[in-house]
Image (cartoon, rainbow, N blue to C red; front, side):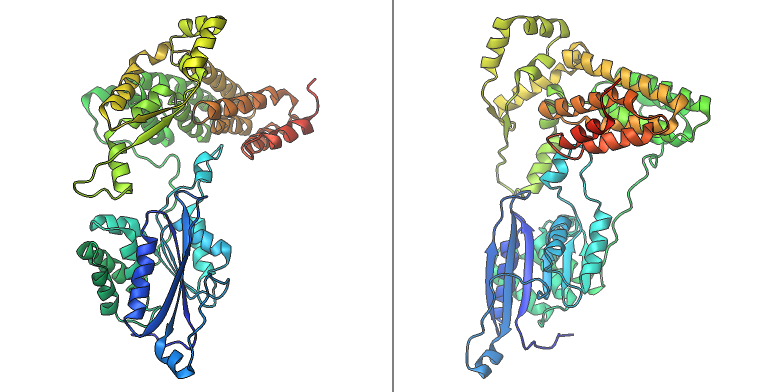
Length: 508
């Protein structure tokens, strides 16, 4: 059913990231309006601070017959005004959240139509801990902020039919009934554009049906860390490891431990997976002694898997040449038939990262020699650009990734292994006397991520927290560790941690 013609302009804001077809979507809407008796105006403000540049497209449309009756052209705005936008179209869930934050979504008048898939922001990816915004919170906020909210995973819907999300958004706009035009008029606008018409119309139909049915999607609940179940069967070479998990790991933790085993095999080999289970067994034994609820074992199972698969140059090279990476990049860029993909990897290894990849004895010899240190600094003084999908760049990365078999001899592996053993020992000792403190100490592994300067910064803060344990008041160790960890994750410069440590006073 058509909506009644308005006596004021219909205002539409499109918030989209670069490359997601926001401009095409805006063009479709303007064309739709102009071919159906409306005057239309479109402006765009590109941004460069978000993931690939977040752009706001703003449109206002006004019925031409009312303009003729008034005897003058309407004055249409160039930018959205908070509280005065009729329709907001968001290409991704975080963009919908930004629209809500800006105030251009209002419960009195705005129909918010958004894809609920996520493309993580730079802030989320670079956070010292887990910086990912909870999708459930974003969806709940969108539902409360808008008069009407229509949301579902439009990116997945588009991929399923070989199209892109902007066509699904356009279909959802048609199905919402927010504009006074019939479905055929929307489809005619797509045909007039003349680009990828048939796939776009199929995707349009998907969006139309979902919106017409009142699609509103709740965020998927986060899985419990121990939710994964053990497989019924595995390949013969993995059976011994699966048998160990069943026999040695408490049932509530088995699913998490098995995922850790698979991660260790992917990272190194089955022997390394066996070492993971050996290390985990020490904490499980302590928990059995004290009759715990296995919360600590589950936490250690996750954190230990993350630490034992630390990112070194070998791991980074391995991930860069995996086929799934090339497939993912091609899908993200919408690579069509006959088009070539080029990937430029910008690398700037520091001397320490090179040393970390060498056998421990050789690396220490280089560190002791001023001449060799200067030579290494000269060789790594400038960055390199590698084309991972060209033979030369691929072979270089492949050669580095193939050093995985020698990883156990490297300086980095030696250093990380010692730190892991020390961490596990401290967690086990704390668990015998102060279980909540052991949980907080286990969670301190969150500080350790990435490689290079990022990892060094996290390790330095982790070590400072360990050094401060003795200064924490008896009975308040768990709260103290948690406060210090949250301070360490609070800012890039470490100022919050400095303040928190200063509050403890000088160490005795």
